[in-house]
Picture: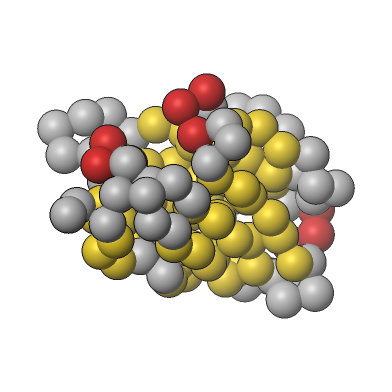
Length: 118
């Protein structure tokens, strides 16, 4: 069982930055694939970025060059640095985890709200 707790959301102006954190429980974190998803009002949840235990990353095209995922295996924590934020980045951001490189995400955090508005 993996438990995930996100933090770091908030209100930011367009062009601003935020850093989200996701703290994970469990002793196998270093072998866990981690992801960040988001869900905007009235839209389906979408995958934003992933990172493997070894640090290999994936980003959806809409955030490439603006968002950066990273992890600290010693702290059981994954981060999402959000730069050059746009109003369309407004969403609830969810941390997720799985033990395989593909397939469904069985573990989810509670979500943290990111609002980009002037």
